[in-house]
Image (cartoon, rainbow, N blue to C red; front, side):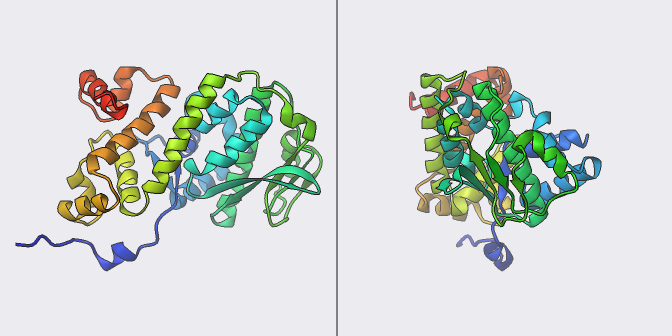
Length: 320
């Protein structure tokens, strides 16, 4: 008897959700004192908007303040990489190159026009959510550049797409005096002489190691489109809930039969085990940067004991 799909027209035609990865959603929940028993790995645009709006009721300028609630354990790997860069220009280039790994909603470009060299930040989200995200990313970027160089780097001018908020006076401590609102784009302009400022924690070895890993992630993101991308997102969510992902559980969540989902992955050149290994290897590095122990990493990656995790780790690294 031929096994049939459980896919529905609604599921097949549904517009793909956009997600933010990393700890931004968790930090918002921590700010709101609404800790989940099982925190999510990815937060959809709708979920993030709800969290930002709730946080803004307590602090209207939360977009400017949220990064102050981050610990180094909350940082995305890109925030760590910037501190290992040789200079400020390289850190800005890394922000442009890898920003998309943290969120499906974000893109960063480095541009040069009559006003100088700038980063242009675009957020594919409703205006209110986009404003909070632009404020957060702009403060985060300048904070890391100042932390890395040890100097109070101040933009020569800043332009924002959103209207001037009531708390606009708070912008000055981050962005200086030359601030424009309602410009149709978000751009931060840097002093040309500041671009060559060395990063105090520059480390050629760590810089190359992390860049190599992020380049691999960019390649995986390109591969993990379509059904593979849906399964990868489901795997991350199951691991965050303390569950061990399986082909059957993912097939059920996606309204597919296990045989059909297996075939869809094979059409993209992947087996479920390979995809699961990729997601676990990516999460492992993030957990290592956060200072988690091997036993804690094993548990968060869904392994019942340390030995099973260490054996799988050899497989990821091609030693098995």
